Image 1: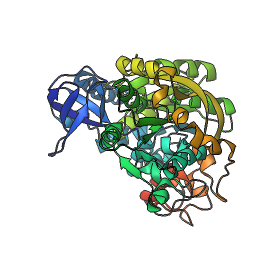
Image 2: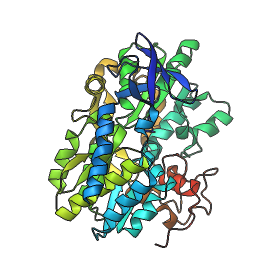
Image 3: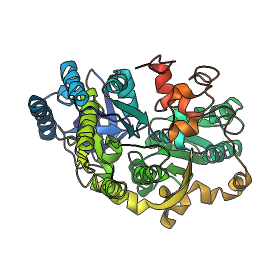
Length: 72
Length: 367
């Protein structure tokens, strides 16, 4: 139920966005819960974007893991 | 940057994390409360790998369909039988109630529809003059979509039978019950995306328990467990956030504001649990014209007097409290299957029993 899938906003009309989930899958999604723009990556749950993903944080996480494991 | 930036599946890194955990020489039991986490643990065999490293993983009450009570399911069935159009998510309609499931009611000619989103339910309400009741299940991840829909002035024939529930109160209740010694908790990444980090901090303080918010890729889950084990071995009890690409400290403020506008906290029962303070969400007075329990009060009167019991042999209650693994249930794979479920944990794709069955794990691992 709490499954959420990342996708990229390719179009926006009012509170509705067209999201590209990759591999040819697109779908209309309600954007009223987030402040997001075309080009942003969002997490989509039950037809609603629930957060804008932060690519810098994503990279930071990967780097932190690598560092942690080199030390460990 | 592509979608791959958000996929963390490097097997050699997973093995490295496992090795680091093993070297801590722990013998601990950790709990998570999310079917999507359990799916990652089982799909990639991470729980068996972790067991070899001294970490036993249990799924607690982390399945919204599973913790919905038989009384709530009966309310939906009664409304369907009274001629309303009842709309819900796929798994919900298959959970056996007192006298069959919503799907059985549909087979008897009642109007029961399955949707992916509450917006599909609104579309149905716009096409019919019949009363449309949306059976709203889900934790804080899902409740904002219900709130956003209700503030957007839905059609008058639309109402919500709210069964939304909040995760922090059930964690607090579970730790307070103390039936089993839980050494750490992996917090659900998408619930946390909405509520943020703060609500867990009080729980860590009160119960002296370490927590880590984790994402859902195999590496997210393994790093979450690693961070948890590091806290345990150091004797710490704080809340760490592994899933920072989605979880901000304050959560999603827009979603939280909408939820506060639409819902009041209310004491509710969970399947397998007694009444848990402030763990439910009822519609505020301003939205009572959309509250199925208010506008269909007469039809629902009969449900109030009903008593409900667990089907003989079914141990979903104990699975939901994290006391047993599904294989300990006498019905698991012997009378209870995904195609013919007895209890909700075998129905929902997020249920612990259904996940164990799906990955072919009929017997408990002997590691």
